[in-house]
Image (tube, helix red, strand yellow):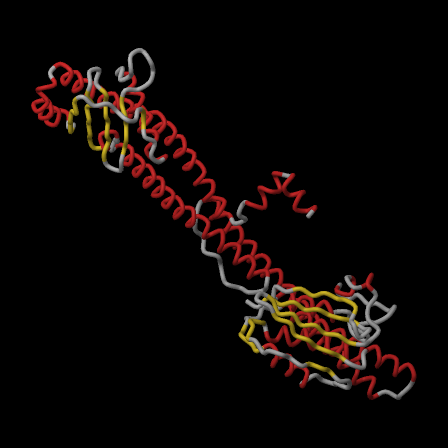
Length: 456
């Protein structure tokens, strides 16, 4: 409740909540706002000023025609037939005179709000023609409107009532709907054209964002097509240059690690053969242990170099893949429990995922007596959780263990006898999928590793 009140009391935050977040939507608002303002200003100027002026002129014309007919009738009531013909022919008025009669109602009969502004204008014009009783402002006429007719009954100074009817369209200007139609249609047309152009300008920016996202996940889609406005072309060109530099850097690093690791294998193998041919002593045994450690380091370097190499995604049934990794895990000595409820198809880099999960399971198998794997799915992510009942990792060391060559000795060493690259390889594999890795306390007392992979 307090958060809602804070948003209401802060107009800037409220505006941020209401406004759309996409660039295309905001661009449409920028285009639509001036169009709406122009329509509002035009509506006020035209309908409130121009239309009112036209309506007042039409009302005065009708009131003047009625006054003229009344003057004819009062001068010669017996010539009503000729007056009717003249009024119909030259003024478009249907006239009838009822002698020795008076009005039962005076003023204006109010209909709906739709005709009220017409009634007010005509009523004002009739009063200006002095259709009132004596010097008072009380009208001596009765005005009524229907959907297509205007009825005006005027009480003569001598006994009698002049009844006049005419089409309501005489009070209505055709320019009003025409201007409304033309301005609205032109505004919609301009908005449509501007939207198409804006969409075409934003499309390269979306492609650039998608390419950057895919490249960050390790997918190489080739050079980005340079298109759009000059600034977008410049941005696309710079992105292609940056992509080439990063790829070159990764390739050089991978080649260097692979070359160094491969070149170290030969002297290590030679030294192992020489030590095997020498007499077995305590010094010999220590040297053999050091060589084994060096060999593990070389294998770790090679595995780290392979982890940085590019690999294409493929559609894989994730539960079957996890079960296959469990079944083929080398040196498995403790139970690994995995009971999936679904087997969805997701896009992953199979070798990287295999290496990632294998490293985690080998580590759990080394330090824990039991391992549990669970699989959680939603519309956007696939979450793999690995729990064990081992010693775990202190909370303050959970970020440091991802650093290459880091060893922790206080509770649990994830690379005992290795190089300290285990979790670095795992994190690189997860990030190359565009995912996340997080360490937590397991409900079984050990370590919980949460791997989150995007489903697409």
